[in-house]
Image 1: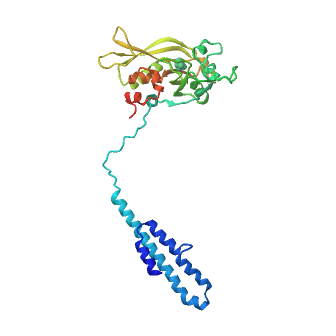
Image 2: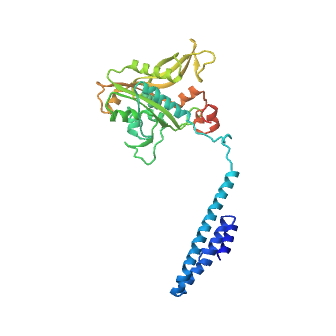
Image 3: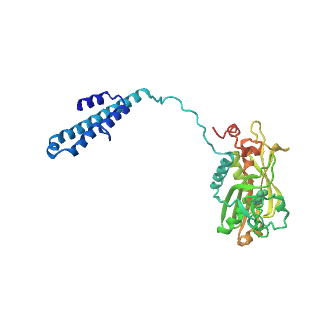
Amino acid sequence: IEAQLRRDIDAAADAGAIEAVRVAALGKAGRITALLKTLGGMTPDERQAKGPAIHALRESVTAAIAERKAAIEAAELEARLATEKLDMTLPADAAPRGSVHPVAQVMDELAEIFADMGFAVATGPEIEDDWHNFTALNIPETHPARAMHDTFYFPNSNAESHAMLLRTHTSPVQIRTMMTQEPPIRIIAPGRVYRSDSDATHTPMFHQVEGLVIDRGIHMGHLKWTLETFLKAYFERDDIVLRLRPSYFPFTEPSAEVDVGYKQEKGRRIVGGNGDDEGHAWMELLGSGMVNRRVIASCGLDPDAWQGFAFGVGVDRLAMLKYGMDDLRAFFDGDLRWLAHYGFGA
Ligand code: PHE
């Protein structure tokens, strides 16, 4: 048996063949297994005479099979290493890479610019209640400004005092901040806002950044300096000038609409500007004003002790002006070619 098994073992050329030899010798119905079974029927003397030889046979065949198996595996590995080659010098396939969306990019820029002026970033919920979005901001139930905001209301909410809605501006974050933080306060609040409105320059969801400063002795000079510093940093030019036009917001008094202007020169144009006689291009940019005493009081602060200013600016508009985009809707189409065209994306 041994000589025959050794020939079979030596002849086995691959992992399947050597396994077949093992089963034929040592498996349940194997030849050596059968020999081992005969030991049970022998007399003690017989068993003592033949047992050691049978056990030795099993040991040596087991070892021979293991050795052959290791040799086969080593040879197979050699063969694979010889044929499978990976050329590390070949260029990799171009995999699409993600990038920062222009709106997120602008929000990051704003957070950085305002951080340099000592502003922290605050946030509030996009699902707001009527009180934070309107009432506390001096926009009572009957106020026409409520209609002007084209508000998305939740149909099942209690319309009386706690109607739930999608916030129409980031101004409710002013309220939430004043109610939870002790002045002095210096925050910006970037985020999504919603109005039922849709055309080339309006989308039902858009982005604003709110600014709020509450401290002692704050006046419009602080507001103007802050906006000027911010806009010069954002547009990366020193010739930015501001024009404050009297305006009206229920939550600021006085209120000012801010236009940004810059000397027009050949080759450097901010898209969307309108020229004037002095060679300035002007753009309407943001709403602002001194925080209304009633708003300060509705947050539980003493308006004789604390004053402040606030402003609100459209982030999408800021992005369009800086990067030369002309259709607001494209911001939210998720079209990679559009993003790549403006330098965002692979
Ligand atoms: N919340 C106003 C808007 O959405 C903007 C604004 C903010 C105006 C803060 C004044 C002060 O139009």
